[in-house]
Figure 1 (cartoon, rainbow, N blue to C red):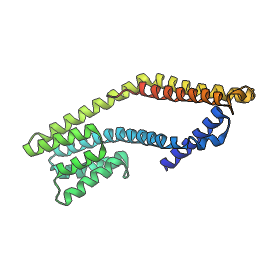
Figure 2 (cartoon, one colour; figure 1 turned 60 degrees about the vertical axis):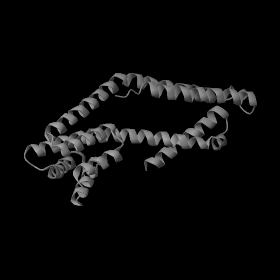
Figure 3 (cartoon, one colour; figure 1 turned 180 degrees about the horizontal axis):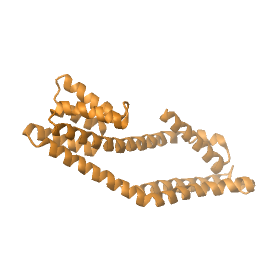
Figure 4 (cartoon, rainbow, N blue to C red; figure 1 turned 120 degrees about the horizontal axis):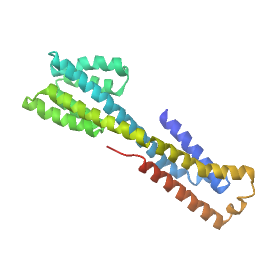
Length: 235
């Protein structure tokens, strides 16, 4: 469903660009190959948001596992108890509940829990989860204090998430300014096209005008992408 929505948005953008910059809707067909990088970009953004959400859910999952270990459950049963709590927090169909169920199923098939957790970490493509899985594997094999290790790892992930949220608050105004500045050029062209339709006639249907408008479009796209990169600060 999300992919279909992104496809519709991409087609709409191409049609708008074709009409505003070149005066003809059919020009969108020429730019149709641009849909490939656009859809890849949308998919990358979706994955990034899902990874951020999964990291936060995973933190809660680890705290639940640590709490179960603290009252005497084995590590395998601790994951089962944590799954019950996670269902109440995030719902039966959340990514973290599905992941924990998968871990439990693998454990039931006589796969050790550290291997099941590592498989989940690799599939999640999340650096924090992968680091935790590595620490968990060596701690379990060496007989380390699992409760302390899990709590410490959860606290580290929590601090990172909180830092990301603080940064997001600090740059929220800049993101808003970037969105406004991205809309303004298009808004000006739309206003001119409807207020004085003949103003852009010299820019359409001739080589020099097409070149100028293409250069403006390229500068606009580069400016938009640079702005997105500037206001995105990683931790």
